[in-house]
Every structure is written in structure tokens, then in C-alpha cells.
Image (cartoon, rainbow, N blue to C red; front, side, top):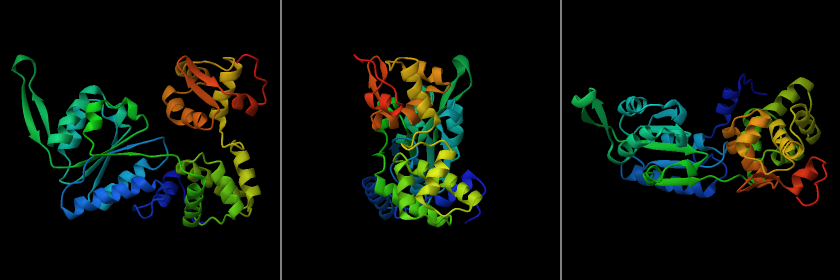
Length: 326
């Protein structure tokens, strides 16, 4: 097995470096390929790109690929770290011509920063305030043409003026089981893990249609194989995931805590997302962006105008009898 000491090194080893290597999201790959190829042919900076979708589907990887296939440097930042217009001005003014700027969680930018970004994206300039009080003046600063790649798990939170300034918006979807199996086989080959077809199938089944989760579970299986000297079989995968508290449905401790709390504490709901997050001791954003989308997708909870509700499938999964009338 390949010697990989950290999760970052593991993920770096597995990250595709081109659209041809990227598995899944065929329509998005085709559209990006056309857009980037046209920019190369016309010798211009590619249009701004918005990547929207649940966590772990490859938004950061695609941003890296956009920069690489554009032949440009990549600058990486995130919405929560750009708290003032001065922070954004410092980043934008230091960009070189053609550089790609990646802003993760772009929906979390403050309103004033968003307004500065509008102008920068459209006109490649920003207005700098010089001085204070009545004597303050605004000085326009011309920027080098750049490509902004924004990533969001909550595209509905982006104001329309910001969304409209992206030349291309990609909506990433959860992966099919067969695509996840391709991801696992590729990753296992790259890190020197031998898994039989049954093991790959079992791992894919519990990966929630998400490459990041598939690779994370593969790392845990790798740890188990190293410690126990086991072959990469379905039994070994089952044993490894049991140790790391991943159940037969791919649910982890937090998923089950949400379902259990919703049923035992709130009688199956409805319960507001903030109340539910407080009850399980997690951030609301984590529940909304990581936990809830999958539980809704597999039919274990439902969103209603009054809050989240556990479905009959959730009651059955936890082995609990649903009261009549719910």
C-alpha cells in the first residue's frame, strides 16, 4: 500500500487533474470543456463559473481543473474569511492577468463584499474609499481580467445580482452507484488497495452518492486492512465500517442522532431545523448542508412548512412503532 500520512495527502493523491480524469457529472464536464476550449481558442479569460450542489461532489476539484486547463494560477479563499470590503480589495488587486480566484461558500459573503464583487466581476474594477467623513473620495482601481469560480451548497441564498454575473452555472448532482464504483476503483488503484468487486459494491452502496464520502470510507477501510492484514473483501469492508460506526444504510452517528432526536424528543416532528440542531449539539449549517439533504433524498425525513418530520421509513429503520395518526 502507498504510504499516505494524512487525510490532506490522501485527498491530494486522489484528486483528478483534468476533465478527462474527472468521473461523473458528464453534462457539467462537457459544458465546461466547451467553455474553456472556446476561451483558449479566442485567447481570452474564461467566463466566471458558479458551481452549486451538495458537499463532496467535486466543486473544489473542478475549480482546480478550471485553473489548470486555463493555464492560469489559482488563488483560493472562502466566504467566511472575507469579512470586509478591504479583505476582498486586497485579494482582487493582487490578482495577475488571467488568474483564477476560487471562493468557496460564496453564499456566506457579507452584503457589502458582494456589492464590491458585482463591479469587479463585470467591469474588472473596484472603487476604493480614500479618507473619512465629508472629505472622503472614491478612487476607481482597474483590475487585471480574472476568472471567478464560486462554490455554494446553498445557491438559493445567493442574491440575484451576484448569480446573474456568472457566465456559467453548473448544478452538480449526487452520483449513481456505478459512478461511485468507478471512483472507488480509481482511488483504490492510486493508493495501492486491492478490493474485490463485492467489496467495491458494498463500499459504493454506503457512500451516499458522494465521492468525498467514498474516499473517506476507503481510507478507513485501508486502515482496517493495514491493522488486521485482511484481504479487501466485502466482509472486511463490513467489519471496517462497523468499527467506524457506519451502518448498513451508510448513516453515521450524527445521522442517527438526528433521526432518534426527531422521533424520541419531538414525537416524529415537526421540529424546526434550529431546534433540532440545538438538540443534537450541532451547527444548523451542518444539518442543512450535510445531514438533511441525504436524509431527505433517501426518504427518512421530510421538510414541511412547520418543520422537519420523520417519515414512516425512519420509524421503521430505528425499529420504533409510529403512533397512529402521524
